Image 1 (tube, one colour):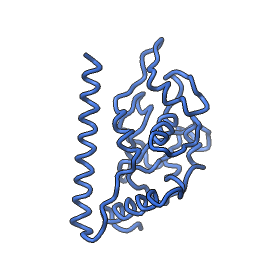
Image 2 (tube, helix red, strand yellow):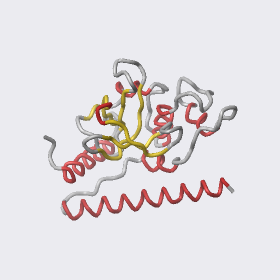
Image 3 (cartoon, one colour):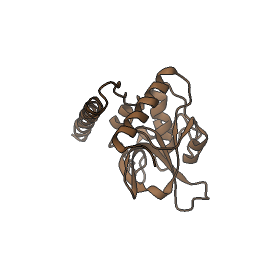
Image 4 (tube, helix red, strand yellow):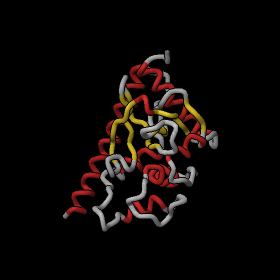
Length: 202
């Protein structure tokens, strides 16, 4: 019964994601009639489809989270090990993009290319408690306001879900390295959309 509910929930998430993409493209067409609508980063539907995957109670472990760990340096660990970076690695691997292979969130600060401003789907690296420590968090950018940044990620309240964090905790924004022309076109399209909707950076 629970599996059926989970499948229905994931179907709703996928449908909502597709609807949001259509709205986004419609806005671009209205504001930038001569521009090509941006593509949703290919890893975002993968991540969204995992929404609801959660840690099990003590004494049990979710095998799906252990699967996330498989491409990192903590392969075989259970769902009690920090898994935000493992989730990001797994999502990128599904679309043929190599991640850091590390379970450390801050490992992403040395990955890909740096962005000065966030764009939809980019990776966001955050500090946890002490900015000078090795601890952190990583997830995919959704939106932000003056105080908070909203991410889709793993190990957010012990599950894959959307959650907000203090904007002041951001350490960096990252995007895949210049490994293909398509990824660069998607980056430019995403940046164009971000500029159009929010205005030029100040």
